[in-house]
Length: 209
Image (cartoon, rainbow, N blue to C red; front, top):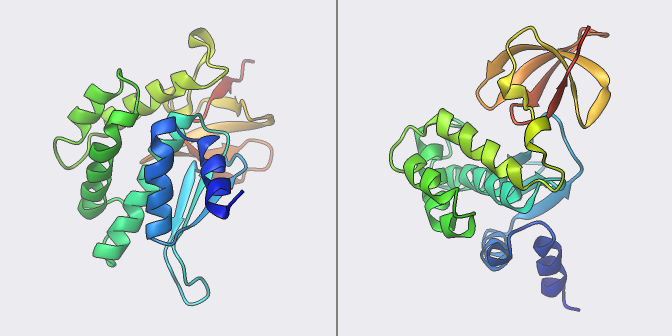
């Protein structure tokens, strides 16, 4: 098995079938160091641009995401890469990033489920991007999780500030939601008082008295 075949096979375990070839070509074209990581509660993906001690493009994506959500997060991070190449001084989620992200979403839209495509069309129609539509799309993408149950699916984004909850992925820690910050929530570990940022789409269990 060649190196290319090995990488394509790895990508095939995480992406919708039609996305493997274009994503592989994208990573290869931009010489991206691509990492599939363990689950991270603070973020779903990450992009790092070249620096003195880090002279390459790097994207990491959580490996526990379903294939459509994996693609969605990849495009978010690829948008950061494109923005850095064209507008090095741009703010992380400003007008330039939103424009590049929308362009990528338009190109990959046919690879998402049919029910998602009308929302993608609406989302990419104008800048600034609608946060409400982004949250709606992410909610629908979670429906493709292998263990999704409509009656038991509750995300952090649906909670009010001051709600105590546990993450499904880390039920041993009791958190309290503090405030929303763009795509994440600032939360407090009730036992230690330490603050964390948690993805708004993280699945939670409400703590009852």
